[in-house]
Length: 460
Image: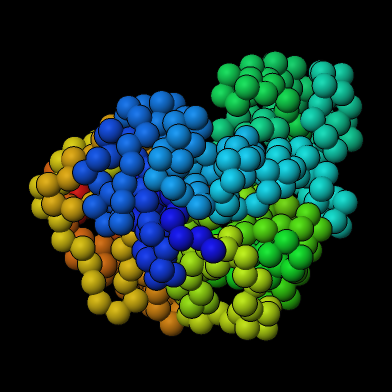
């Protein structure tokens, strides 16, 4: 049994896990930095323990400090949320060695699926389609040129240990490959401590589609797909469930392939398999797996009615999957808009500050995941995400209309956010038609005029 759960994260995801733990009768303990002492997650938790200074390297990424805190509060289990140490095999192994349950997969699976090159080979072994490219990390320029001759240009150079859209470069020809390869290797070594890179064919107008899975180590099921193509600098901005691009046959094949790969590795817990979908050919290709809960999981919960975080905790305390695949049905359409403390008018410059006035939207189909409250001062040390606005309705058109209504009701005074950007997006004709790809948002930002005065009122 898990009686005392240590939550090693911050912001809305820490609060999300606190709520799920309470519903299962677990004592929730939030491990926080000095900068997050007054956070809503700390206030709502049963207990809290400080693990270090504001800098993440000295707190949320400090395994020794976290383990000491876990021992001091008598934790039975650790939930890492997303980001920080959520995909650290070293952390998962250390938690288990300390006699606690890690709410997630085994360290060996995190290593296998967290390494992009190894995950790619695993997918090939499981019979899941992958983007044509190098079968493993390339060792030198000659090997890279040989792959290019086989696959063709343009090519993506990707860090094997990368994630979050970092460590990626594009080479359009052999000369660019010669120039970009050593630079990519240096970047990978600096960012991830690992200079291995691999190559993939660059699909210029691809969609980013991902499949949510849950596994109990023996059996896995999917919770359908999410479309995450609206991205800026390879960071997701706006997601929806399901994808407007897929027909039922393709959806079934895509989701079935995700389950096959999850079962091939004996996956345990919540995970997401990410794919590129080529609109022109109808092909889909596995690219990577995230061995944790995702930021955008609420839209899957909205259309399936399943609390994914609560199910993670049930699995972690020894229960088997409670569902069969036939139990998981879709109903309606959901979108998630990431509200960041960034100023779109100043090149998305971070704008942390104090919340002076806050009015959340409400009504049917509206969900807010956030740690904000009036008087709260945003610490400048972490990610700029301050809220997730999740909207559900019976169909896509209605969901987008409702999203616009929700954004009109939202008021935040004290610092700039990306709310006005979303308000423009949900009214855009191409977005309404679902005619987007992973490069759409950056093209759209370059072509669109600046915010109008009425838009600016949304972000104050």
